[in-house]
Image (tube, rainbow, N blue to C red):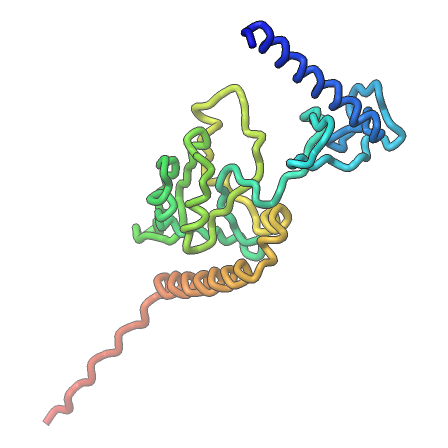
Length: 235
């Protein structure tokens, strides 16, 4: 087969699949249905459902059209989908779980995490982060920091809409940018939050938090006055 015949045959195969894609959708009655479930701002083919169609799940058996007109249409984000790490704090008392132990920075393959420990007015080290930074352009989304964190302080978030017009300041996330509540994580990861492993881990975190609190209270409690030495009786 010559080169010209191969090119023509390839175009014909592509055209056949292109036409079959529309024919399958038309035969199934899905010709003008939205794939992402959301209403369009400008929609020439508005259906009676008004944008309430179920979202399509693309897998090996998906047939027909499955183009989603993002951002007007959005597919559901799966719970295990991960992008950037976040730092979790407890809703009950606002306690930040991170102790600035630096394990996450040590296991990070691209070395995109750096932090500094907080200090008390006396200059002693406090198990809390004073500064915590992650360069999102360097982060490879591997999740090792969340895997190795001994205090269950780091979790992987699902937010993927991170692009902007500047990359040297806004792409470096600080401590305040990374903080999320336990309520937020329970909402975005309901299955993981209710799992037995997570319940056991939360119990360990609460126990460690109480130990840290008692240690901090012991360090700040004023020392008891020394008892005077007993005087010897005069002869």
